Length: 388
Image 1 (tube, rainbow, N blue to C red):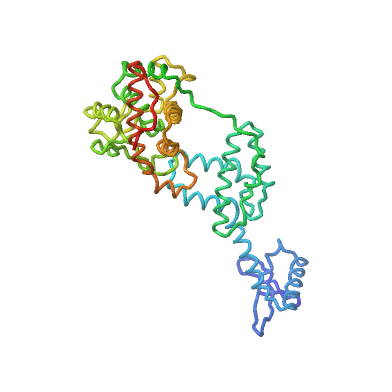
Image 2 (cartoon, rainbow, N blue to C red):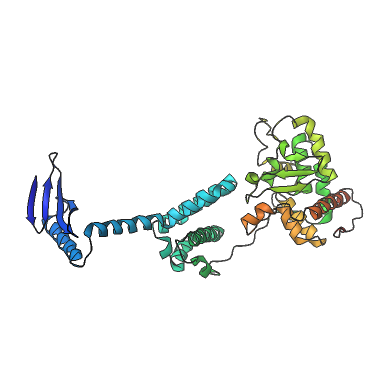
């Protein structure tokens, strides 16, 4: 049933009780209809106003139906180009290459700090001032480092938006120097040569489990991250080549990593192989062989040896190696590659993980020999870069 008002406007009554305002009109000689809303949410006055607006479009040669489709397309496009939509698309594309813990931290950072404020906004409309307001909220609660990391993640999202044609620029570039600096924080580490020698002797005398002792002994020789050490798998080792190849999915920045094994490191691996070689993990957990060693095991062992948490940590072996290898004249790029520090270009990192490998092999063996000298309390001459 239809109740006509005038000018093509009528109220259509459905048998089930629904009532819709509709407008009948002609465009280019063809009869067409368009919905103007549901009664009573849209009153008669509102319906007449909408009819008049549609008539004005027709006067200007515009089809009201096509105009509405275009407006809806703009709304849909803006929704697909919101900061949150672009950020989640960026995350879905790149996160599979990241370590799970790193991936989850980035998503939580965006969900907690950015999406509630900027998520629905079109990414192209977000200014540096808009972003600074959000970052100031994070900074205001004392989370300075989180504010900087949030800014870094936002920059990655904006650059992705630029690359995919949904933004013109990265507004984070205008915020350089706007946030309070992060207080430099170092993992406690023993750097003094005599102190290193004492630590190495203490580790050799560790009276706990063989698995823990071997992990402690291997840590200074390989200086990988503690998580990479405790999750080491037998399938990753090739003692014939003297290599430990850590796959990309276990590395912090998602690129594979090669650890050349010194003769001392290979001896430690050979010692533990009869005990755990038939299992998945080189350093399995104390309660089950199906899981790696606990993340607290190495630090707990250091405490048992008498080293306080502000003196030495499992991560401190990396600082120890970095400090001395740089002082001893090794190629800085080779050191950084061996430390598997973050590569600015992720694609470059994925393909260049073997960069400087011949020099890294010489460096790792020289480093192991140097540590042996410290451990035996011999007169140690600082290593200089080995001749090619």
